[in-house]
View 1 (cartoon, rainbow, N blue to C red):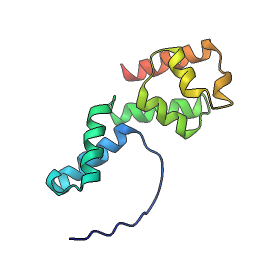
View 2: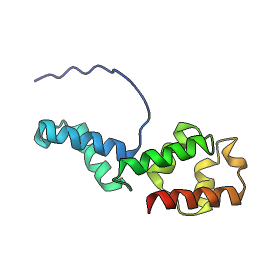
View 3: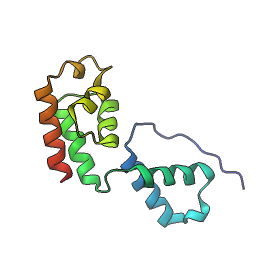
View 4: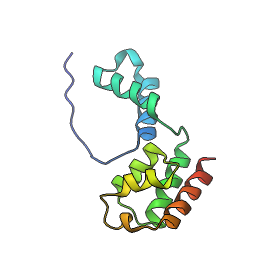
Length: 119
Protein backbone atom coordinates (compact mmCIF):
# COMPACT_ATOMS: atom_id res chain seq x y z
CA UNK A 1 0.00 0.00 0.00
CA UNK A 2 1.35 3.45 -0.94
CA UNK A 3 0.56 6.27 1.44
CA UNK A 4 0.72 9.79 0.07
CA UNK A 5 1.44 12.40 2.68
CA UNK A 6 0.65 16.05 2.38
CA UNK A 7 2.09 18.64 4.71
CA UNK A 8 -0.79 20.61 6.18
CA UNK A 9 1.10 22.70 8.68
CA UNK A 10 4.56 23.05 10.10
CA UNK A 11 5.53 24.12 13.60
CA UNK A 12 8.15 23.21 16.13
CA UNK A 13 6.93 21.05 19.02
CA UNK A 14 8.56 19.45 22.03
CA UNK A 15 9.38 15.79 22.53
CA UNK A 16 6.54 15.36 25.08
CA UNK A 17 4.11 16.76 22.52
CA UNK A 18 5.40 14.38 19.84
CA UNK A 19 5.00 11.48 22.26
CA UNK A 20 1.42 12.51 23.01
CA UNK A 21 0.51 12.75 19.32
CA UNK A 22 1.97 9.32 18.59
CA UNK A 23 0.25 7.77 21.63
CA UNK A 24 -3.08 9.02 20.28
CA UNK A 25 -2.23 7.64 16.85
CA UNK A 26 -1.25 4.30 18.39
CA UNK A 27 -4.66 4.06 20.04
CA UNK A 28 -6.36 4.94 16.78
CA UNK A 29 -4.53 2.72 14.28
CA UNK A 30 -2.35 0.44 16.41
CA UNK A 31 1.42 0.37 16.62
CA UNK A 32 1.58 -2.44 14.05
CA UNK A 33 0.36 0.05 11.44
CA UNK A 34 3.11 2.59 12.12
CA UNK A 35 5.63 3.06 9.33
CA UNK A 36 9.33 2.86 10.17
CA UNK A 37 9.64 6.61 10.70
CA UNK A 38 6.68 6.69 13.09
CA UNK A 39 8.00 3.68 15.01
CA UNK A 40 11.46 5.18 15.39
CA UNK A 41 10.07 8.57 16.40
CA UNK A 42 7.72 6.98 18.93
CA UNK A 43 10.54 4.93 20.48
CA UNK A 44 12.73 8.03 20.67
CA UNK A 45 9.99 10.13 22.26
CA UNK A 46 9.24 7.43 24.85
CA UNK A 47 12.93 7.20 25.78
CA UNK A 48 13.75 10.90 25.87
CA UNK A 49 10.59 12.69 26.97
CA UNK A 50 11.25 14.21 30.38
CA UNK A 51 7.65 15.26 31.00
CA UNK A 52 4.42 13.33 30.54
CA UNK A 53 2.05 16.08 31.63
CA UNK A 54 1.25 18.38 28.70
CA UNK A 55 -0.26 20.94 31.08
CA UNK A 56 3.19 21.35 32.62
CA UNK A 57 4.74 21.64 29.16
CA UNK A 58 2.25 24.40 28.31
CA UNK A 59 2.93 26.21 31.60
CA UNK A 60 6.68 26.17 30.98
CA UNK A 61 6.21 27.38 27.42
CA UNK A 62 3.91 30.22 28.53
CA UNK A 63 6.31 31.22 31.30
CA UNK A 64 9.30 31.40 28.97
CA UNK A 65 7.32 33.22 26.30
CA UNK A 66 5.69 35.82 28.54
CA UNK A 67 8.20 36.39 31.33
CA UNK A 68 11.41 36.05 29.32
CA UNK A 69 10.26 36.78 25.75
CA UNK A 70 12.21 33.81 24.38
CA UNK A 71 12.13 32.56 20.80
CA UNK A 72 10.06 29.41 20.29
CA UNK A 73 13.13 27.35 19.32
CA UNK A 74 14.80 28.06 22.66
CA UNK A 75 11.59 27.42 24.56
CA UNK A 76 11.35 23.98 22.98
CA UNK A 77 14.99 23.25 23.82
CA UNK A 78 14.34 24.09 27.47
CA UNK A 79 11.25 21.86 27.57
CA UNK A 80 13.13 18.99 25.91
CA UNK A 81 16.23 19.22 28.08
CA UNK A 82 14.76 20.52 31.35
CA UNK A 83 18.06 22.03 32.47
CA UNK A 84 18.85 22.05 36.18
CA UNK A 85 21.82 24.40 36.29
CA UNK A 86 22.62 27.91 35.15
CA UNK A 87 25.48 26.59 33.03
CA UNK A 88 23.09 24.28 31.15
CA UNK A 89 20.82 27.24 30.43
CA UNK A 90 23.81 29.29 29.26
CA UNK A 91 24.70 26.58 26.73
CA UNK A 92 21.12 26.55 25.41
CA UNK A 93 20.97 30.34 25.14
CA UNK A 94 24.50 31.08 23.94
CA UNK A 95 23.44 31.87 20.35
CA UNK A 96 20.41 33.96 21.27
CA UNK A 97 21.48 37.61 21.52
CA UNK A 98 18.81 38.56 24.04
CA UNK A 99 18.91 35.45 26.25
CA UNK A 100 22.70 35.27 26.31
CA UNK A 101 22.66 38.59 28.19
CA UNK A 102 20.58 37.22 31.07
CA UNK A 103 22.39 37.47 34.37
CA UNK A 104 23.04 34.40 36.50
CA UNK A 105 20.32 35.65 38.86
CA UNK A 106 17.79 35.80 36.00
CA UNK A 107 18.73 32.31 34.89
CA UNK A 108 18.57 30.95 38.43
CA UNK A 109 15.12 32.47 38.87
CA UNK A 110 14.06 30.87 35.58
CA UNK A 111 15.27 27.48 36.85
CA UNK A 112 13.35 27.91 40.12
CA UNK A 113 10.18 28.74 38.20
CA UNK A 114 10.59 25.77 35.89
CA UNK A 115 11.23 23.44 38.83
CA UNK A 116 8.10 24.77 40.57
CA UNK A 117 6.06 23.83 37.50
CA UNK A 118 7.68 20.41 37.09
CA UNK A 119 7.34 19.46 40.78
